[in-house]
Amino acid sequence: MPRRPTSKDAPPASAPVDALPQDAAGAPEAAWFFAWFKSAMLYLAAVTAYLGAAAAVLAALRKLDPGGWTRTDITSYLVAGALALPLLFALLFNLLPALRRRRERTRRPVLDAEKPGAASYFTTSPRTGDPHGFFATGYEPFLKWAREPRSPLLHLTGLSGSGKSSLLSAYLTSRLESPANDADGPAAKVLIVRSYTDPLASLKDSLLALWKKPPPDYASLSPLEALRRAAQQLPAGERLLVAFDQFEEYFLLRAARPVTAPDESPSVSSTSSIPSVALTSLHDFLRAFLTDPPKRVALLLAYREDHRRLLEPLHLPKRQEAENWMTVAPLDFAAATRFLHRCPGLTIPEPRMDQVLREAASQEGGRVVMRPIVANLLGVVLRLMSGHPTLWRRTDLLRGYVRDCMGGEVTPERTRLLRATLTDFHTARPRTLTDIAREAKSDPATVQDHCHPRRTRPRRSPPHPPPLARPRRNGAGNQYVVHPASGAKA
Image 1: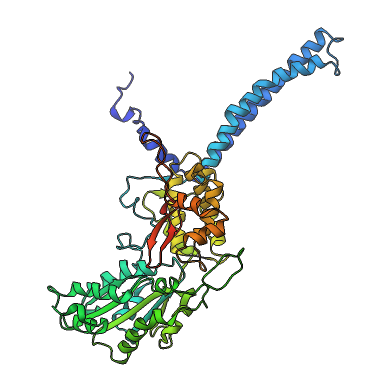
Image 2 (image 1 turned 90 degrees about the horizontal axis):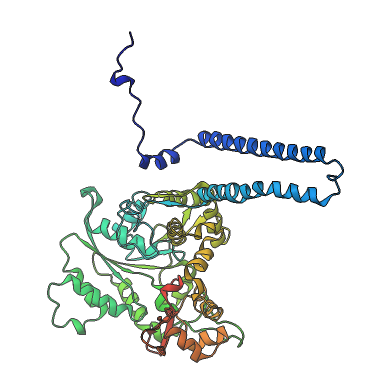
């Protein structure tokens, strides 16, 4: 008699529908190939059968009316074209969309925005913390160099966007102020000073944090005396490290521009001269500091290596590698690839990653390195590409991002203004309104309108596009830096 079915004979429960995308994504390449091959064979068999049926219909028509179906009769071609229309529709509505989906799978990144840390992984601003462990390994020499300085004056250099500010804020500050164990040595207080107007005044303002109550005569103290007395407020054995971040800004704003022809664009080169009067106080402070440095105090100057010649009027001691000078090197392509792949929830197809590396090489002038600022900017574009309807089709990521995301905001006139305000190694300084108008070959009033749009429309009308630049006062009239909406670095 038949056996009673048991629970073991029951069909297995089907996998939940939500798990199908994960299973498909995790399938090996061989499975994808055989699935594609099977689909191709079925499509080829259907096309062959259809063509055979069409040929049979034509043969039957010729047999029924041999005289009316000659090879030169246009009617036969019309009938053949009508019979071929379904194949054309199949090509348009089946094959081409399938090819587009396959192309999209190989180019569009996939992002799980709910993964912790996905939104904060890529950033184009200096990092203040290290929750993702970017500085977990490889930066110990910088820590030892700053904790046990062999010179009272240290130099930290690198290319623009190489990560100097992030190294100071996210790594050295936390590791020096909170040593992991006693073997790391005593703690050190880190003060980061950044000022393009008066670094010494900013230094005095920062030193106030070391007092519970400022001394009554603090305003009359010289910067060196204020530094000396501030060091006395530290606990026994603790050191003080004062880091002047982006130190080259002070010099770039005071560098005398070379005389150029009216049709040439002025630039600040590494050999531009700086009036000695503008550097007198800073020169005297550093000379007095090196002559009699306060105990347990060190100064660190962080600046771009391509602007090192601007510091020559200070007559600083000679730099020595690993003694009083260290360089933050850019990432190699292997490290940059690991950095991009480590973004939580972001999956980048290999063809797209190869394209990213090629574009990074073009941004770096053909060098097989990638500055962290470039890696983060490409990461931002890849993250946006996962949810953008057309950005994944672009072969040029950065330019495609600007064109697809900024749309009609970048008019031809604004393009000329952007070219005059964007900065690189040789124009890294704010531009005056007159300079921008001359280089863009535009009227100063027009430039003023783009920088500060006048509200001439009714209140209910759409707002003006964001300004290209914002003013920054520097004591000698307004100067303009690129607005963040343009994607440029101010």
